[in-house]
Length: 276
Figure 1 (cartoon, one colour):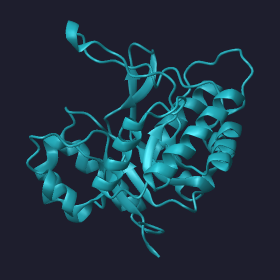
Figure 2 (figure 1 turned 45 degrees about the horizontal axis):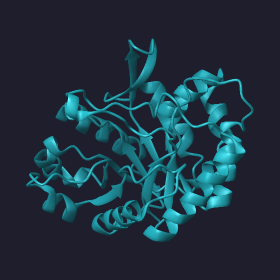
Figure 3 (figure 1 turned 180 degrees about the horizontal axis):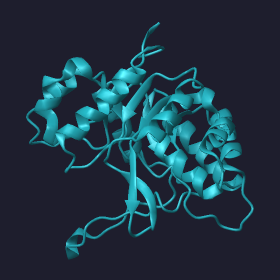
Figure 4 (figure 1 turned 180 degrees about the vertical axis):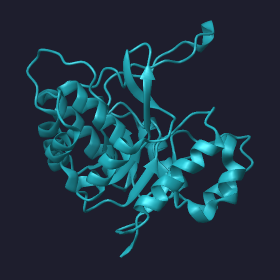
């Protein structure tokens, strides 16, 4: 049995510092392909296990051949043990031509947990998984709004999704905290309803008050003791867990925050587990 892999999302502006601290980082998750001007990338690619967390396609819609080829190329390029994707319904949008920044509604409006959408997700996950040749790991996104329409519970939906598609799960602790608060539930009770036996990676980061939403939201900050306590609870109940990732992703992320986040996870969870 090997040690649980501890890592973080790759931050290109911190690349040299990350390489200098490579003995304390097992893996790096990549949300974007490496830039052409990233001179550190060859050494990063050689030194670390890389986890694919890029946008691969809209799982509620059929994949194009271009999307599938790109997904397989990224898996092979990174030698990633799995391919991760959010369970999202709305495409990221924006118009760079008029000078406006890209924006996205993905996290604010998660998909409805309905039977017809379940059918679409199951089919498309199977297609993606077969094409890329590695497990697909699905990350639930936080529920902020509740609509008065017939739906499965989130737990029922993900149990069926995993059973019918064969996918694995990524458990994002801040996401779970936000969803549980929306449902008016204790987060530990909420977690126990999920198919924790299918979780292979856990994401951990902090929450900060968001003025637009008027509530705490995901932020590139350190996890507090409550988040770490929930993470302890989850790690003890995820028998297939292989990796835990500090999920702070921002071009303005400071090196101190990055390395302190990794240190917190390394000291707390760098213990025997299945690993890669």
